[in-house]
Length: 154
Length: 180
Image (cartoon, rainbow over all chains, first blue to last red; front, side):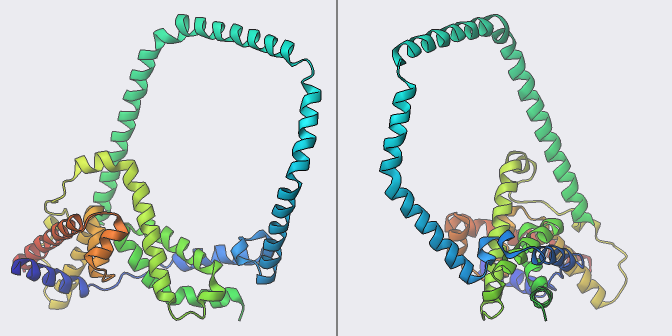
């Protein structure tokens, strides 16, 4: 335990003596470039949190009113939509039968395509994709490590 | 004085603190600069409140820490597998330690400056899981429990990682002192 305390103290003392890193000279100009760009745009074009308070309140009240209106009108909208759907689906049994037949034919065609063309190639494609992924990941890891070592040395 | 001018003065006042926090947490200057910019842009959205707040320094540090941890989470998720294969938890001597110049010019100030530079580089080169809790403990003065809660790890793991980070830094300091 004493060794741990000594280690903690020694490292803390050494770290405390470190000068605090200074911000690069490029930081402040790049921040202000964005800020001045935003300051030049109209208030309604910026994030809602930056709007004048009175407009935040007004927009909040407008949104709440729209929500209340929508909820109150929902039954009427639902009834109107229901009438429209019933009018469109007058002969729905015949339409449903045709749709099912068309879907079945499409499924059969897809099954033939899979069996004759895609399935034989699947294992090759999976192996190729896996090899490519592993190669890319390893290359990236090596590059990251080289970059880190160079930065440590710089 | 316009809002932008006031904010510019604000940036100049706090940019060193924000950048120092970020660079020690993420270990890379370029990433720290990007994070620092994001911090100040968030501050700009709330400048009306922050400009008169006595706790603006704490707010900036908290936001900086959170953005750094988010950044490290994304980075770690991408390279976790290979980076953990590449370097163990108990890192060996740092590349910089082996490049200590045997014929360094005399002078206590220069030697101390060199030692500090080596230590700063070594700190940034620590693995994320050692450096982040170490920085939160020694620079942000958070307790083990607070760090564990922040990072979503157990207190035991935090203590172990911090201990290993200290051991790695101590090795560097001892090696440097031996060459003096």
